[in-house]
Structures are given as structure tokens and as C-alpha cells.
Amino acid sequence: MKPVPPSTERPLAAELSQFETALKETAKDFLALRDRYFEVKKAQQQRTELQTQLDSGSLPSAELKRLQQQIDTLEETLEGKILTWEMAKEPFWQALRFGGLGLVVGWLLRGWAG
Image (cartoon, rainbow, N blue to C red; front, side, top):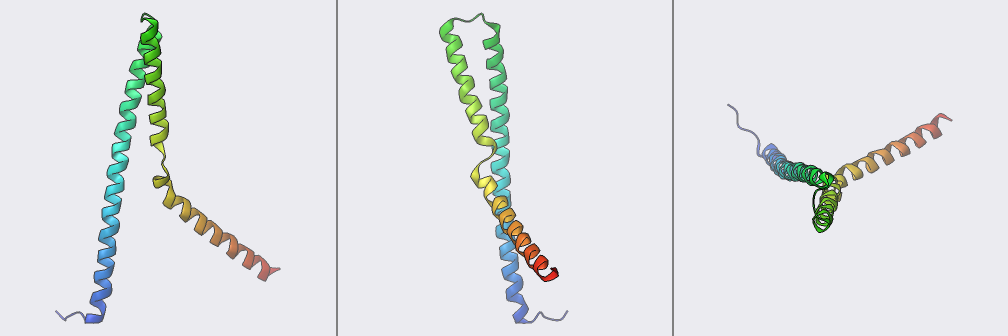
């Protein structure tokens, strides 16, 4: 085997390091998404159970009020956990960057054509 010149080893090592970092971030994001999924699923099940108890109507008024408050809290949890800024931040900036770039290129092409 012929040895790899030292000038090409560094870029390869840097690329591998960047790939490893990106892979770790992706794994961390996946685990966070998985945890959020299970939290939402659990909250949905709890909400269904509480709603069933609430709909039965055979509970005292204080218990009904407490159940309704729990349902409201679970709905807030479900709404707040589906989409966070951290999840949407990168796709938002990617869309803005490439959409803006497409718009500028379109204006330039239109200007050159007309």
C-alpha cells in the first residue's frame, strides 16, 4: 500500500471529526424527539382516561372540576411539546436562506433575460 500524503490526512481527519460531531448531534436530537413522542403519547392516554371519567358524570362537582383542570394542563403539555423553536430553528433558517437565494437568482436571471 502506498502511504497517504500528509497534506490529505488533515482534511480527512477534519471531515471525520465534523461528521462525528454531526452524528452525535443527530443522535441527541433523535433521543429528544423520542422522549417527546412518548411524553405526548402518555399525555394523550391520560387525557382520554380523564375525559372518560369526566363524561361519566357520576363524580362530585369538586372532582369534576379537578379532572377538567388536569385535562386543561395535559392539553397545554400536548400543544407545547409538539413543536419547539429548537426543532424548527434549523429548517426555518435553511428555508429562509435557500428561498432568499432562489429569489435573488430569479431576479438576476429575469434582469438578464429582459
